[in-house]
Length: 379
Image (cartoon, rainbow, N blue to C red):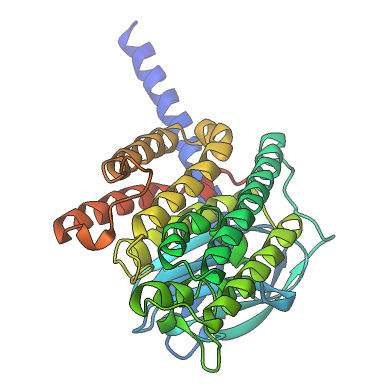
């Protein structure tokens, strides 16, 4: 090729590249302009707009307070549409969500307690998403709803067996059945939490009780079984209530608001759950069965990812490659602690160095997983 033609070709390549970058810049600028900005402090929850169109919505959140906070989007009846927990002071995060037309509330919860500081918002449109549906995402949502229902259906007999052991006064059998009764719940916890009232009844720890809230559910029974080593009439009554509350959850799965972005956000929430509760040993502090919950959380997150992977891998192949690798690594790590009988090493036997290894593995997976929702957004 002549020097003149080479120069012309180079200039043409530069022109094309510049145009492409300009196009990307315009898209990025539009995305930034369309985002709903949420500034959370210890005393306020400021939002940049109170009305916006239905469809894909990005919430750019900045925690400008001194406390760890949470941000929720609630529909009527405090039904959770999307959420992000454990937003540290001085940090930023983005939640991508698909939201239908209607009236909602955004809540910031400094200290991650209470009903939060709330702002009303209106999502306009014809009631549906503004984005065209990718049939692969529609299939993924349908498959995930089926998976969530299967997990709920499998939980009921497991928790009934747990309750039966308590009601018969068999302390050791009840202890053995505690962790297995939680597996389906832990795999699909974001769906369960979306109903608002089920999670507080079934899975609240004593230190997370709201003022005036009666302590019920798994962790109250966990304390009775391990710390108090006693089963009385109160525990038998709580066991029956746990079964009833979980049957309520089981019946609600068909009405759960599930979208591709909520699946992706839910996968990230499961990893956050591991990072903040399981790795620290706070979740199952009496039974030390944290690794069983840890495994279930990872399995649930991986299921959501695998269903979304056909679209994510097409749009962001490097992200999919990273997620494949990180899920494999954390699964291999957990397998080292699985015993011959299928149970996991008691978490009080896991050293601080080992816990640090778990923490690093969770963080290594959580970072790319936080990008999954953006990778499946229909544009």
